[in-house]
Length: 189
Ligand code: GAR
Image: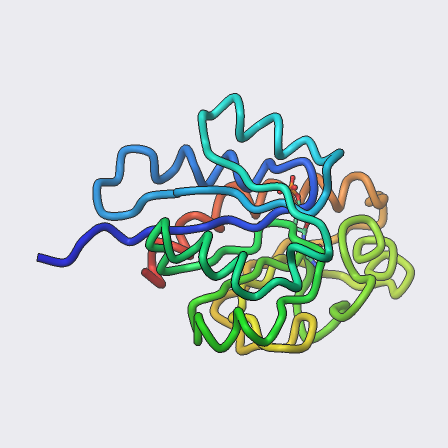
């Protein structure tokens, strides 16, 4: 019998996606959210993980570059998939090689537009607004060694109106992420 699929979440921010994904799979016997790996000691996701009784690992650049340390951490927990839920560092090649087509990212825009280094959070929505886009959305994609360039798995869109601001676009994206991201993950698994 196939054992449970174990997932590690990587996050750098407030962790609304982490919490949503965790709760979505909480009662699923085949899929387990095992841990959160975080690169930012001030990130609220660490407190959220504590509240959810979800194990977390805080790491710095030195730890992140220590291939053995990170791979061993994931190996001990029998991690099968990695989900980036607002994680802002580039994924190193050692992780991509170890998890081929098993690292998934969510991006708060319709790639290939508005991706790349520095394109996260409000920066994305600001660029979308300044370019007078009439739609935006979310992209879930496989991760390769370049920011936001891996093959696209799914996209969901939402209209932008003349009244929209960075804040209202952020809210629309948040709603899409909460509604669709866990479902898309489930479909892939
Ligand atoms: C999400 O909107 C996610 O799409 C975005 O960071 C936010 C994290 O929010 N990711 C990127 O911008 C990746 N380039 P959260 O910490 O509340 O889940």
